[in-house]
Image 1 (cartoon, rainbow, N blue to C red):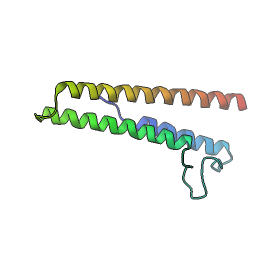
Image 2 (tube, rainbow, N blue to C red):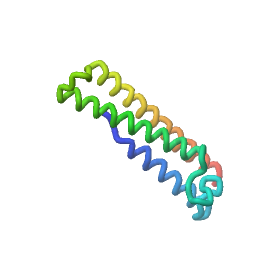
Image 3 (cartoon, one colour):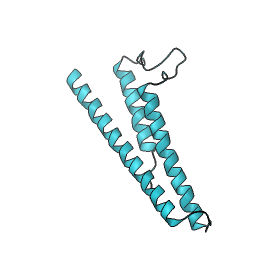
Length: 113
């Protein structure tokens, strides 16, 4: 069973909104370019790419599991199990990264007050 990555995306959005509020309601200059998008190669874009990759891995594993359940000849149980474990490990890694980011943010906010 895989878990949705919406919790990770939600945490990212919450951290961005809290950072914007802490900066006086305006988004930090380094986080937003003149076009309104995150700069290429920035931390937020790397984090978003990782979350998207985790989501894609989960969707791929679920699709493969569904194909196996329907009896597709080109899908083996071994492949399904390995892909499901890869998706689970990726999700757990993303969850731990989120936890570390939230802990670091909380520590920074406590020391700056």
